[in-house]
Length: 94
Image (cartoon, rainbow, N blue to C red; front, side, top):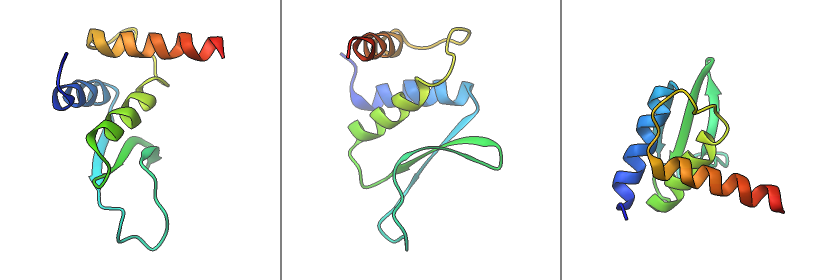
C-alpha cells in the first residue's frame, strides 16, 4: 500500500487537472472559524486545508472534493477510482 504522502500527491495531480488549486493555511490565527474544504474564489476552484490537521484529514478533504467532479476523461490513479466507487456504493446502500 502507498504511503500517505504519495496518495496526497496523486490527489493533488488530479485536482490540478481539474484546475483546482490547493492551499494549506494556518487557521488558528483567524478572527472567525474556517474549515478545510472546497470553495470557489474569483470563479476558480480552491481547496483550503488546515495545516494543523493530520495528513489523513487532508487526504479525506481532497478525496471528498474530487468525488463531486466528472473524472471519466482524465487519468486518475486506480486507488482513487476504487475509493470513489466504494464510497458511492456504500452511500447508495444507506
